[in-house]
Each structure stands twice: as C-alpha cells, then as structure tokens.
Length: 230
Image (cartoon, rainbow, N blue to C red; front, top):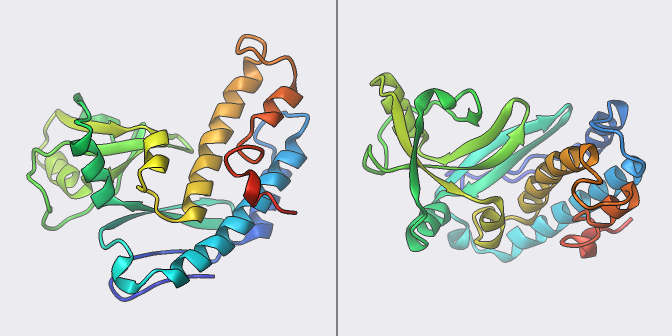
C-alpha cells in the first residue's frame, strides 16, 4: 500500500514483490549455496514488514508522524522503494552523543557519497556539519541524510572541504532515525548484501567454515526472525 499526505510526512511506495524476486533471481549478486533460500527469506521478511508498517501507521495519530523527513528513493529493477529518514532524530543523535565531526573533500559527494541538490533556505547555519550514514547502493557507499541544502550552497561557493558527522548503521536502527518497520528491514537488507558479498570472498579468513554458517547469521534468522513467515 502507498501512503502520501499533503505535507509529505511520509512516503511509502507500493512494493512490487515480484519485481524484487525477479531482480535478485535473474541476475544473482553473488555465488551462495543458500542464495534462493536467502532471497526467499528476505522477501518473506519484507512482505511482513510492509504489513506491520501499515498497522504502525494506522495506530499513529497524524500529529505523531515525524514532520521533518528526508526521502531517499531507490530501486532494484522494478522494485521501487523509499527510505524515510527522520532528520530531527538524526540531528538529536549527533548532538546528544557529541558525534565527532571530520573534514572531507567536497568532491566526495557525488562520487562515494550520494546527495541531492536542494536549493532554497537551509534550516541550520551553513557551517553546521553535514550528516551522513552508510547506504551502499550502486557506486555509492554513503548518503547525506541532513544537509543537502547546505551542501548545495557550499558547492556553489566552490569550497574545497566540508565538515561531516557520520551516524553508524547500528545507531540509525537503534535510535529511530528510520521510524518505519519496512524501512528498517530494507536498510538492513542493503547492508547485509554488502556484508555477505565481502564474507563470501573471505569466508575462512573471517572465521566461517561453510556457506551454511554464513546463512545462519543472516538477519532473517536473527533480528527479523519473527517476520520471516512463509
């Protein structure tokens, strides 16, 4: 089901589950003895998470839905989806836990770091660090979840470096920065595909004796075990 409203508090696409299956089964992303079971397990988890998100939204009053959301659209072939990042939660986290800022080259944005050009007034001081997190999609490794307006202005001003604060994926999931269940699941799936791709190429070095060992540590058997319903 798709949810949209006038002030864009949430964006949730109709999920094409057949498109997900076809994308990952027609062109396998890595060689894995349990690949089909793994994909089917994740498909079950995503379907159940989608249902839980519908119930989650039904139980939330309009005023309790986060106001300040960054929408990151993505797709796997015909499987289109949107990750809803709660910007206020992200900003709250980096300040509460005093996340260290670091200086990076501005040309990393658009190369390794996905960003969106956003013209118009920024909500924060232009020197407020950009907030990024991991999102390995295509050629990108990370994504800007707060600071696209600031970054747009800084790029136009031809600055060479910018300050960033990085939120680890674990903290994205633990601190409600992705408030909706289906987004948490899809984000975790993206991270796991990257992790498994690495581990399958370094199985013994990383302490795994077999593909079965790796299959057992998948989040479909652990974090999202209760959602893995066939």
